[in-house]
Image (cartoon, rainbow, N blue to C red):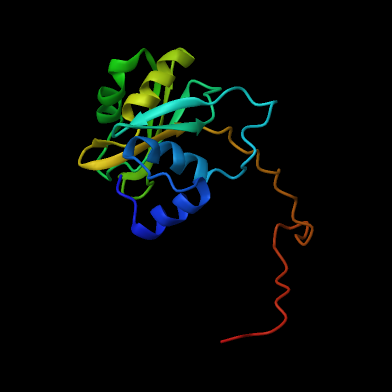
Length: 172
């Protein structure tokens, strides 16, 4: 990665007068872009590493689930194409490309679930920032789905099933 002259100058000021080599730039970028300068908190497990384009980023949290979120998919990507791309890294339990209800085409993201964390970690490291169907895909750990609150019963309905319209004014 080539640093601009202003970014290189800023990093030299922060770190002293030593020139920045390309091998140190990925470590500096990770340290420079991290939100806390004091390092990882002692309660978190040690971060794992992800390699891509010959640079290593060390400020990545470890996997806690074998389910991966895949973004940046082509609109033409199907479940079968996603499965064939991720199958070499382990036993796949579930592959799902999220599709539009009307057109049936991909919305640009999907999920893959592996049998073990080790297989998911390998797939994460090998497939992140790689090309699939001509698009660069990004692989991240899937987050737990947030529970939606239960719908509240409509108190304005009458016993006959009609809803009372309480519009105050008209704009238009």
